[in-house]
Image: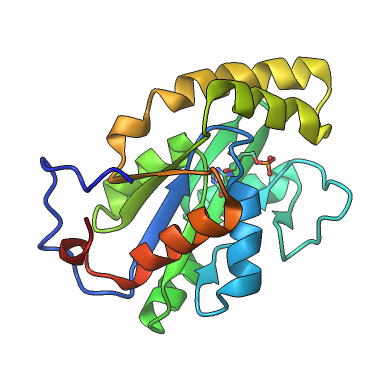
Length: 203
Ligand code: 5GP
């Protein structure tokens, strides 16, 4: 684990519960980590994003995403309902509904956003007190293997996502903490431990 950036001391952060923003390159396993946390750490509140992309087999509306039409997504942008939103992989819109995040934090639950790099940068602007965590693959070859092995995208889509991943990997240095996804359980436990400990207690 990389310790918090010395240029951004977090000693003035509010105490836990806290907002953790998890980002990382495509296919690194953010979704798997979220699913593991949903199952094993019910005290953590997980944001459910809105998206305009089609539902994949096995996905449940309202659990994995809120699947909405482009017109509805635009209406929510205009109404200021998103904490952040972005076009991901040049294809679909994804966004974090603002209200549920604010309510979760107000209720005292630690909250987790699993979003892309563009979204993480937006949240950095509006909620700099959040903890920004970058999930990295054990290696580039492993990332390619996971993306191709997942089999949910065609070859053209895989190429777009690999290009995005290559750029996103270079952004790790912008984050407070880097977690290597070498093992889902270990990485999930490391992430959850960050949600309940004060920054000064890490390292
Ligand atoms: P997928 O379509 O494979 O579920 O997700 C594609 C990408 O969209 C992932 O990198 C995921 O982290 C990102 N993503 C999911 N929800 C959001 C969101 O609410 N906002 C942003 N900016 N990205 C998101």
